Length: 446
Image (cartoon, rainbow, N blue to C red):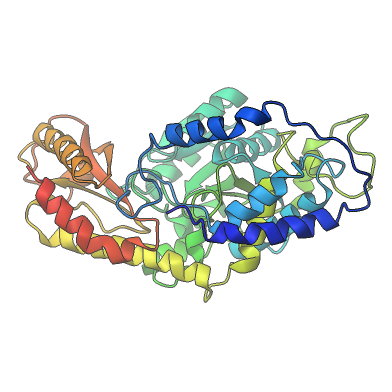
């Protein structure tokens, strides 16, 4: 469960790290509280046991993917140095590792040139992208789909930029006609397209959005925090492939390595296609940037202190599993999508369930059948509880009832939103566990 066999390799790595500092004179490094260290560590382990089994294939609720064992080990190794990637003075080696790892992600997205860095997560990465958009189009609106992450509206408030939602189609994707209607007003500075919505894994229609940019002057930001890595997967539907192939058309992209990139929290990334936006970050620091004339990551980041350990973990993981379409990493993504399609097929073919649309990535939404939205909402919550009692952990999502009514006109709509079930099959191991998941669902029906 805890990859303990991998950690037997740590002593050799520690010895290699110690060799780099072998010339230092010995000193007495006292450890406060050393006498009770084991006791408190055991107590910590007991407290951490009060969690859902996020690492297990029977957990399919939220977007929680176990870090790769190498990422855990590289992070742990770097913590002995505890580098700070704000400046080269605090994280010389890990700053270079960050630049190399981010460059590989930018290449995966199709950026010929880029400026970018890691962040504490997708929220901060999106904040930076929209901050840049606001500086380049001051006072203009940010628009995002009604299924975009709620952080965009919040960020608009933080930046004091007007924000508006654009309607979705019945598959949770931005409606291009509704977007064009909004663009005609001439006051839109940035369109946020979503590549992998958190509720349903929907990918906005980027071909149509890119076409609109040729007629209307707006900045295109793609929030690919969840779905960006799927550009490497070989088994996408044609419409999803066509969308993700256009990541390189964006002015900025956000991707979260701590989702599908096999990294510990928190590790997000923001990328800008035009490196010239770096001039917007200019500031003076009389004590930080003095050891080198090279670019310090703190000079292109709104965040200051950031863990160099996150960069070490990401660099090591990508060194082991390169971001190539035919590689082992990409095969893991394809396995996640196969798992979602397999479970979707079982749900679709069973008359006991509503399945509004086929998953685009590895997230699917569905519900036990009922005559009314009220009945379906209640049954969804009951199945959620029963499944958890049987060891299967799902999530309850509240989505527009129109998503279901479009396919099932017999459903009587009593309220605009309806509770349904969501499965996130983001572990490659899920593919082998679909039959077990299905068997538990059958036992959990009411």
